[in-house]
Amino acid sequence: MTLPPPARARPAFTPPHGLRLLPGWFAPGAQRALIDAVCAIEAQAPFYQPAMPRTGAPLSVTMTNCGPLGWVTDKDRGYRYERAHPLTGQPWPPMPDALLALWEAVSGWPQPPQACLINFYRAGSRMGLHVDADEDARDAPVVSVSLGDPARFRMGGPQRSDPTGSLKLASGDVVVLAGPARRCFHGVDRIYPGQSQLLPEAWRPGRINLTLRRVN
Ligand code: SIN
Ligand code: MN
Image (cartoon, rainbow, N blue to C red; front, side, top):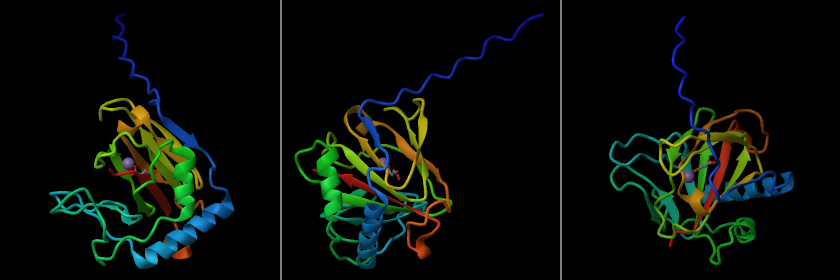
């Protein structure tokens, strides 16, 4: 009997240096205070539908920002940072103190964050593998906060084709991408709808992710 050749083993995923998960960093009361702050921000700077550069295909999340700069994308001008909301033309609302304190506690970066991107995931939303690469301050860490329904977060390496691994992020968890992890592909496979009551009813099921970045 001839045996088939052994299947080529899939290369193992090794989490990149600089990836840190801080589970439950925000206790339930602090999560509620953060969501109240996000609601106040959204009342001034409503979620809008971002689109992919060139194709104009809609992203599956809606977005807004707070802080001096906001990350935006549209068909004609692509990925970039702007000082004002694309629909209202108004400056982004200020960043809540709790987020500035988080950055100071976990980033190890001497200057404050300049942008907080607020991603809103509905039941079917996801985010494809990407690298955060629109910042001149590419050595400054990225710090992100999960609120509401859990999500499956996927982490890879510096090449899109590198092996990946995943972890489930719960409400209140914080992820830090620093050092080599800052330049690694990552994304969100899915959310687990209906597991959290944190978000206001009109936003459920749903997940909010707050991504803090230094831009320049
Ligand atoms: C992102 O990388 O832009 C979002 C990550 C997340 O939603 O957890
Ligand atoms: Mn990202």
